[in-house]
Image (cartoon, rainbow, N blue to C red):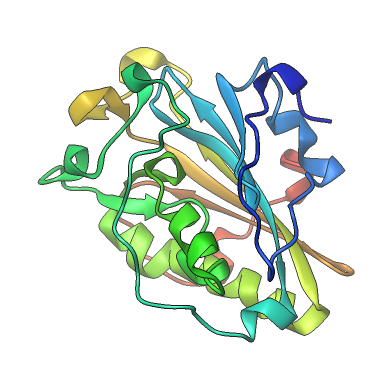
Length: 221
């Protein structure tokens, strides 16, 4: 169960997607101890940190029948999230000339069968400063993998975890005090398959998907 005091009200109604219910195995990442704000975005749950001005975890379910519908339209513009208090809100201009991409935590391609779903992935609360190579070529392979497994097995439960340096004195920031993550982890559970991937947030020599396989027991039971 999510902490009721932190769950923001759902205002979205979508005839294609069902209201996402948090997968029990992922629940420890969406507590009041771990999150400044737990946001129910209808399509996904977001654990947002005021300290980092970014997400710490995003969970969602993708289904083969919806993925096969294709995209509803062209990519929308990035938008600040009005559910976050102004002092902790980020905007697309914060990333300009930062050297980092506006990296989706939940991929647009995994949630774009309706315009509403697609727009939800372009909220800045779903974005973190991501190394361009990791975002465009390395993490992207794990995103492709989640969709492949969902199509193969019918659906997939996905958890994306964003880790920041434990030593806060080592955290670097872009404009507006947005913390740069240290690591990204993707957990995929599809039928009898469970796979996890762990990526650093810096340039790498090896871009192969299998090179970033991780032990899922470290993250979920």
